[in-house]
Amino acid sequence: MSALPRAWHELDAHQLALEHARGALSVVATIDDCLRRIEAANGRLNAFLALDAKRARARAATLEAARRAGERPGKLHGVPLAIKANQACRGLETNCASRMLAGWRAPYTATAIERLEAEGAIVVGATNMDEYAMGSTGEHSAHGATKNPWSAAHAPGGSSSGSAAAVAARLVPLALGSDTGGSVRQPAAWCGIAGLKPTWGRVSRHGLVAFASSLDCIAPLARCVEDLELALCIMAGADPRDASCLPKEAPVPLALEGLAGMRLGVVAEWREALVPGPARELHAANLRALGAAGAELVEVSLATTRHAIACYYIVAAVEAASNLSRYDGSRYGLRADEGARSLAASMSMTRRAGFGAEVQRRIVLGTWAHSAGWSARWHQQAARVRTKVAREFAAAFEQCDLLVGPTAPTPALRLGSHASDPSAMYACDALTTPVSLAGLPAASIPAGLVEIDGTRLPFGLQLVGPLEADQLVLAASRVAERIVCPERLRAPEPEDLP
Image (cartoon, rainbow, N blue to C red):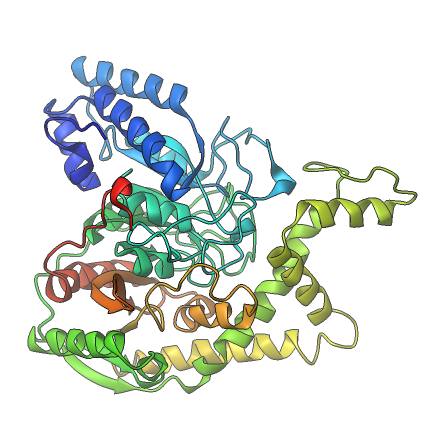
């Protein structure tokens, strides 16, 4: 692949913006090379579903001209940005990796993307994902599985698989995903990059295609925590177009030089969830390193979180069944009802043709769990468990400042290894779904490599904070990433993908 003299793709987003702002790198040349890298790599990674080359090049030229004219560059001046295919960007195909929305182009732009663009970011394309954000491995896409940049035989995680792979492969320095039950944190861990789930409501959901509305968050992925901080400070803040958005001002990064005196809660149940072997050993070593850096490690218990997977998949499925009921073949999206003799038959035929197996599975589960005679036993009970999980977290934060644990029970799984066992795939979210149920902020940072069957794969460390403590989570994560992974993890170039 071609590269510019200053290797723009080796720079983090905040560094690249500064180079563009002072004229050391051309925004136009960066975007041209970015698009070439994507086109060259996508056949191996399947990370992008659509490119917006014409608009990206035009915007690059506009930004370059504005800088030369003396206008103040934004905080992300000329930074290529990838967005998940469930986020609206005017004129770009927003298909949620589903046949149901094939060819649908958004007539407006999501608030979070608008705010990033206002600071100079340039949307280059929409990334692959598990259909309607339902999946943990990146395999449940109507356009085929995304490949992990560390190993083509392994999953990149899901559902924000394309965004995570694009950042890890250095195709873009910054990408947006959506996190409902771990869909940013888990792929960040499996791809060796950083990912943030903000406090629910911290970032506007306007323009995000709904999966489970009480859980969904637009969330950033990057190669370092500093870029996550920058993205959150730009995206967050009240939005009159989203009634669930917190009426708060955009946060300011918190200055934190070290972990001395910080109490980090080590959740016994999360540590025990790790599969014995290299991953468990690496996690223990990382905890020792944090302790040696001055953090006080406090043992805490979150007993109810062992029920979080069951609770999450009932709550999320019920909300998904409600949100996806709009795809009836009558108003928008696919219509595949040739020969149908009734409205019910038309809807059934359209949904059978438009939705993949995993989406259909969750719609059926959600419809059943909320049906008459079963709602009290399943959905209402799950809501009670959710409340108890949130209360357990609140009690834990009386003993510590932040919680720390592995992001996922294992490193990346082999593609296809759980195709016939959905419950095993759902178990990949065991350590991220409790946080989502409570609406808490959490970040996953790279925590080293482990060798599994002769393949070296990334491993992630998750830091979790109390409600609205996003700045503290990010500041501590920024310090922790230098401690547990002082050398930046670097995936092979896509042409060298094993």
